[in-house]
Length: 251
Image (cartoon, rainbow, N blue to C red; front, side):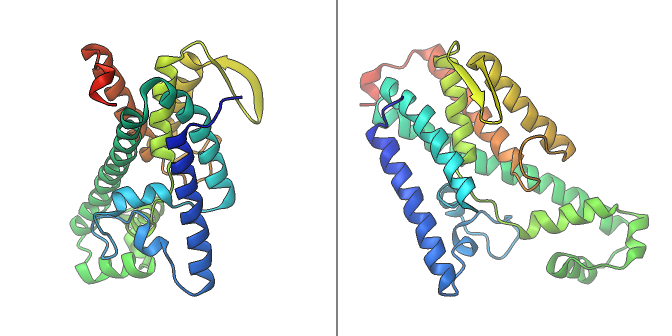
């Protein structure tokens, strides 16, 4: 069993504290997700700090449990190799990068539907009504599909929460440092080497992000945040491999 490292332990504790605070606040009529979850940049609830704060918010017990388990397993292994400073830089870079790429993907989806609605002659008032209530005149379906309208409404209103983007970055880092380590899914307990397991996992996220079809994850999974975290993790690992950063520059 991997011993939990100090920095990973502190991040885990902070996540748990945020989760408890969210529960207590909810019991007292305060929705912390409204302030700390990541909203779409055109939503009035969006704030710049949400690119970071979303990494410490989780939707459910299972959500935080799986993310913190992955943080412990993969994060501790990486911190043991890199040290505290380099690990923190990697973790937050992957997490913030995931938030930015997720936002970009949502912006592209949003603008595509918005352009179709405007081209169809839908007034800004009616578009605002769709965004506020999710309701619309069915005649709109001649120009824009129901699925697109649901995506349009969801992108604008649903906040993203979770450390999954940062965790995907850690997975990539782990896979490149320990390619022959054997991993397995809880519901598919067959050991597979990390160099095969992790690319397949990321490939499934790409498939789901492009098609909207969920394989193993819930339908509301932020696939583009996963992809973004994995991409930033890959780019950092390739850069560090190329430049062979001296450990003393980080610790």
